[in-house]
Length: 272
Ligand SMILES: [Zn+2]
Image 1 (spheres, helix red, strand yellow):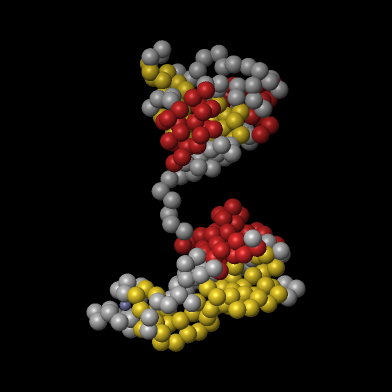
Image 2: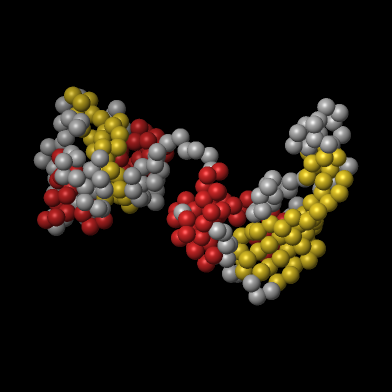
């Protein structure tokens, strides 16, 4: 039961665990009989030597965790391989040139993404996974580029008539700046769901009462708070620009007057 929390250590032999007031250290060694060369992919059993690597891991009970791991250098037997020797990597435990376990690296990436710089470093230290602001920034730089832009924190969604009574589209707004974010070719749940999946990050979605939009939000970003017509948008959003769209202006008016139930008299009839 306890060891299930250390599943990444099941592929090595843990020889000793040293616990002091601040640090838990696992003394371990790699034991798999053969390792693949990263150059040729050839499996080798010929051990050339070994050395100790010290890896930082996720904290346990407010204590920093270190893994003192003996890894081996193997000889590559492939005749055409330019690497004569290579160091083994252990799944879920080691990465080349990284002095942290993959689990800790991912945790620090999430902290760095949420806070960045010194605040991220302070939180990491508080969680017993210390990392300097510079190393957190380096982690962010190594993250793959995201192809999509995030959704605004407070997203407004509304339909509008392309051809009144026949063809409708969807307009998306950043409710904090009042800027138009995107325009979708219809007002279906599928189209809005696909957009939300490509643009994560919306915490609040201000929408009309159309069930298609509600369904899309529930499906693609279930953690977001949905605010319908009789919402309290003005108390949860920063001030949107009154000129952004008729509905934005109406939302703002409703928030300012404390109205808890209102309807827009006419939907936006054109894209601004
Ligand atoms: Zn090789």
